[in-house]
Image (cartoon, rainbow, N blue to C red):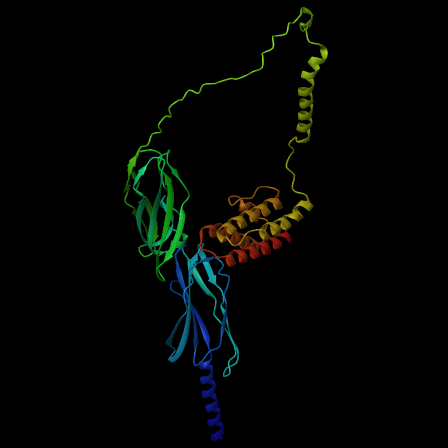
Length: 433
């Protein structure tokens, strides 16, 4: 009896030891209540002991989040977890919440290949919910999506310039925050000057700090101003929970006015050379004089073209007479989904932000065809009143993400995932409308 109890105890200890040595994965964020646009760091940690085989990570779609274009290198180190020492592989993801409310980072799956000493193994993270806070009101007029702590500087080259020439004007916003989501600040110049669209460069120093550089090409039209103006930039500081402003210094210019010099007029003599004798004018006898009144057929040549044009215009007016706009035919409504699928399949997902814009246009186009009226973001609730609650929520989430993602650092995969969800929701709408 005692031997049996001892054997069971040993088996229990061995089973616990084996369970401890199996690899497992933990996902966590550095902040669970961020503001919209505030960057959060998601850490994916794989804990294991001994050697580990090749790993294949299946990432979730990150619905509701923008993902940084910067890819961080994996870290390898040791860590004690619940009193046991493990080797750790950590992968980090920089995410940007796109809308207020409760968002969920779904399950990561890691498939670990078989080794000579261990079988193949698959581990999963738990879903992680995050409460995203909205912007505080009132929002400053010069707010351009900045969430964090920033500084602003400006420069221009060349500063000694003539009217009609071009210079390059740069505004650099540095610091910690959602630098990838920033919009170009508003620029005001004299009417005679020309300002071309800004080129944007994003640079990452480390995990938290970086800079966004906005660069404009400017054509100097006149010398009505002697400097490039100061640029105001407002952002929300989540640490102080207040809006703060930074203003760049004006940039003095030395502008030289260049006036066009009139060219000297040169008189060019015209020389006509001919060896042919000029024929004398013909004599006109009195009988060749045209009649005082044109013949009748002459007047018909003038009347017939406008008369024909008037008849064709009247026929077109009758054909195009406006009628009360009917609800689209059943056949037309059945084509709405086909048009949506065709339009979304033709989108170039290589340009993710532009793809999000085209996806939002495709959704509103489908809804307009479906309802027989123009549907926009302002009257979307009129259309959704006819839908079940589950479809209302799903459609609104698709629209919100399509609108927000136009200014977020999303990827091609994000855009493709959104396209699939839009098509699924619209197919479900077909079953109830």
